[in-house]
Image 1 (spheres, rainbow, N blue to C red):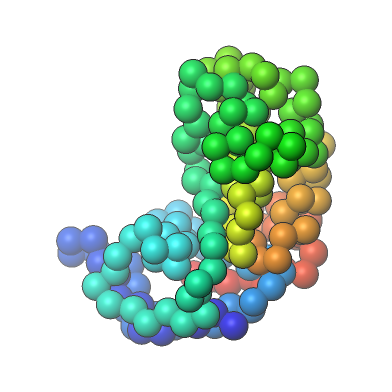
Image 2: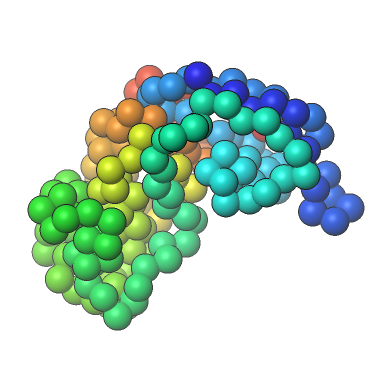
Length: 183
C-alpha cells in the first residue's frame, strides 16, 4: 500500500492541498479524477518526487522504480520514435512497445514528423518500456482515437501499478481493476 499523509501544497496564495491524506493499492490501475485545477497532476508529481510540497509523509514508494508520461509528449524531435523509446530500454523492448501501440510503420520517422496522437503513443511507449514498478501517466488517452485507446488500455492493464490522471470518466471505465480517487 502507498500512503500519502498530511500533504500540504500551495502555490503562492493558492492552497491546493491542506492536510490531504489518501491510501492507494500496490497493484492495478489508480485513476485520479477531478475538475481542472484541483491538483490531480500536482498530486501525481508529488508522489513521483517531481514536485516538493510544503510538507507530506509518503510511505510505500521506497526503492520503487518509476516512469512518467507527461501531458506533453516531451520527445526529442530530431530522433526517431524508436530512438526516443530506446533511451529507456533496449531496441527489442522499444520495438515491442511501439508495435503494440500501432506504431510499427512510423517507428523510424523523426518525432518532428509525427502527429499529436502518434507523439502521445511514443511517449506512452517510452514510459511503459522502462523497467518500472510504477508508471505515472498524465492524460494518457488525450488525442487518441478509439482504436488506439484500446491498444493503450491493453498495455496499461498489463503493468503492475499504473497511476493515471484523467478528466474523462469514460476513458477510465475502459481500464479493468481500477481504483478511482476523486479530488
